[in-house]
Image: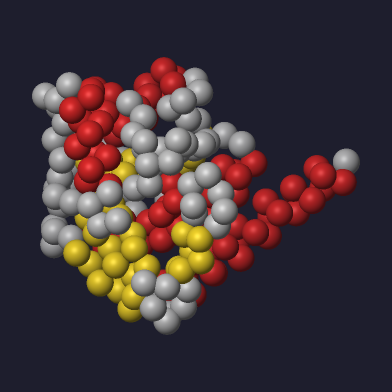
Length: 206
């Protein structure tokens, strides 16, 4: 009972606090965008590693002044916290995982892309292995006919959690380097080739 109450309170208060923290960290850092000035108006899949997810909303905002995106979030307590937090940035969510209930989630994501939404996804989420690309993003892009933008977020000052994804939290008063690739078309690639291209692209600035 106590655990249920504490989780309910966490879901009420932590997302708002988290959104304030993200804004504080963003605005107290200098930002440098190493990215194409424009991308297509068509639906795009934005991909970044799970450990670099925290500051992703501002890369998206760099390209889309009016948010029209859903982020693929796993359906558990941590996922609920993330889902409620990113709503403060105008982003929706798709609940599920390309590891569990993969077919249902992929069908839902493909439909969402065809409805005109952008999709945010962590190819090594929700539980790893870290920096290994699951096939879901490739199948999604190929079936929906969508291109992929690979995103890396590299703060010069940060805390790194001792979690499976080595989650990164920028410290204030540093520099946030945002790297975004040009639009990647994997429509004609074999799975293993596309997987390698995405992995190398997301590790380009390690």
